Length: 331
Image 1 (cartoon, rainbow, N blue to C red):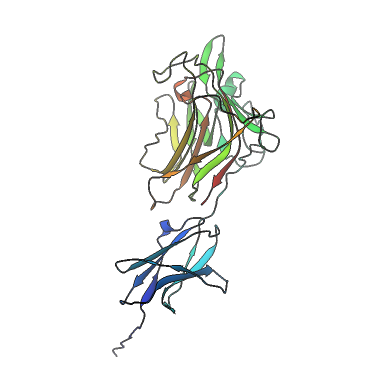
Image 2 (tube, rainbow, N blue to C red; image 1 turned 60 degrees about the horizontal axis):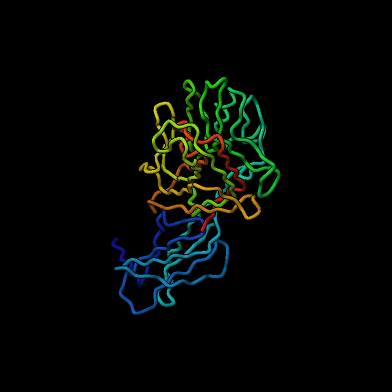
């Protein structure tokens, strides 16, 4: 039996591209099936709500689209394409990305299971790590909680570059902090895994910082020689790596901000004394530059160092950075 269905639909609702759905905005999709003089739009609402919100559609060929903003993260919405007053019979649902937060980003929780101080509570899960595992072999922690300068709570995190050794035998170690884990040592060289699993897409990193650069007194690279002023750095990357990014300082297998796996990147270099008017911490923001709007991340890498060239055992024993209340901003 041949069944012919004649549809009088002018527009049809289409599923949105996954990459078009963010935490607080989304691009709605539809198709114009028949030419019309009617006004084209979309109507959308939170699932379970009765009230539709109408937004005008942009037409490109036969493709309809509209970007809706001010959505709530981790929330399911539904929408229909509309021509005049006639809505498509097809309703599409989507769920916005989570506005995922950074654990222990006020740096309140620490413990010392061995010689190395770690940045998570006893019995808790590690998210941040530092170079303390290496420096603690010489009874020094380069990254510690600090009560002197802070934005909120009891502590900030203090990254203090220093020479780690005995009787002049040792290495320069940068005060550092990163999302990931210290894996081990190859001689005096560190093996680190940068990155924690993460699938959201923030627009920027915000936090509070104070930085005092010293004069470089250890140098093993022409990029920054003895007598120069040290450089601090904070950077953030989202990427679709299959595993954490393995860093091995011995063979200079370091983080590459031009890695093709990076979806979004932002950094702030600090070349001078940086602090608030009261000598305390200053608010800072690092916008994320998205290199692709169609890829979804699998990992987040955040790294802070009181000495940018610490991986080259280069910097100043007078350089110190304080950080507090790191926060991801979603737009």
